[in-house]
Amino acid sequence: MIKKTFTAVALAVAALLAPHAPATAAADPVREISGHGLNACPRPALCLYDDHDFNGTKDGRIWVITGSVSSLQASGANDRVTSAYMNTPTGYEAWTYRDHDFGGDNMIMYFDKQVPNLNDNVSLKKPDGTQFYGTLNDAISSVTFYTVG
Ligand SMILES: [Ca+2]
Image 1 (cartoon, helix red, strand yellow):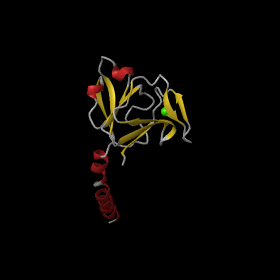
Image 2 (spheres, rainbow, N blue to C red):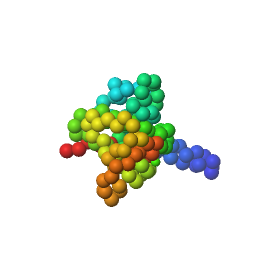
Image 3 (cartoon, rainbow, N blue to C red):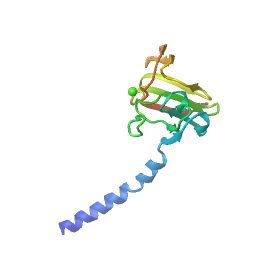
Image 4 (spheres, rainbow, N blue to C red):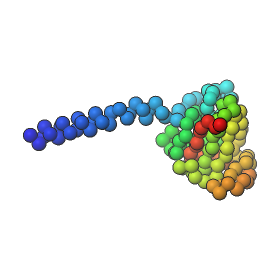
């Protein structure tokens, strides 16, 4: 009798949890593709490349961002990105952050912005909004991606 009740409860819990799984998968804001160059980046998206100059002339890892992600750890992109391309029309913005959970120094990406090498000094902002020039190579850990206006 106890076992039967337990099974019924387990089935009820499974039924409650099941509808959430497909929604999570469909909303995944990061996917990885292999390629090189600006043309490899789908639109609209922020593309984060494993190597400088958008992976140069050889195919490599590209993480395609289409929504905000609080940690790039699960996608394998954490602290790896060396170049970035914002392949969107106007009306999109993306902020790339040094730390997880949208923390630390950040770099703002807007339509058609290309950053071929994050070893070079780029315009960054501290969490308090102070602007400075610094590098963000192999450092990006979280990203916001959204439409504005
Ligand atoms: Ca980091």
